[in-house]
Image (tube, rainbow, N blue to C red; front, side, top):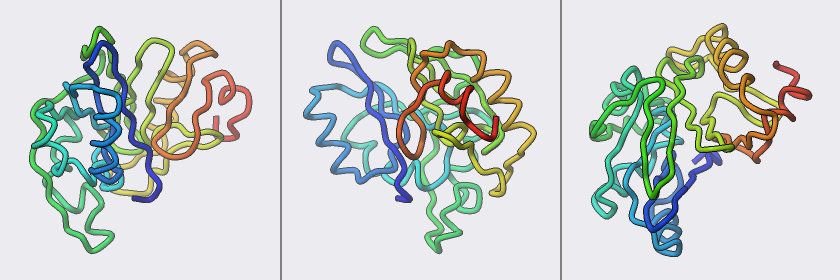
Length: 194
């Protein structure tokens, strides 16, 4: 939906799904092809285009759904999750757990660090795994997230990008919620919004 990216990351037979906005059958087929048992479904934020297949996936994966504590209410509220904008009025089941800035989730020996990056939404997060970072709708190639929906805040967004993401190493690979991957170094040098 709205060309959002869904990511699957794993090792040693275990992994995570980040932002299940794609068709549930496509996500399931990819997981099966990778031969992974999904331990967590991690939501960078709860806008409908990033969570559209969440409740369809849950029964088959038996994975724990986690979201930032400030974002949790959006799952059960069609105005906060944006589905009301499309006339869908979709309500999702509550998350199994909440995360906070600095928390670390482990799957298959991989560590996924939660970085709270408010701005696009109050409870938006990025997820760092080694030299990779999944940025949801905080940072894109040559762009940044919009702040005109719900509880978005431009000042918070820019603070999150400048004081959290731009402190990462240049070679850190950025996997955004929409569009193609990039690097922190490329965005630092070329992104017109930074």
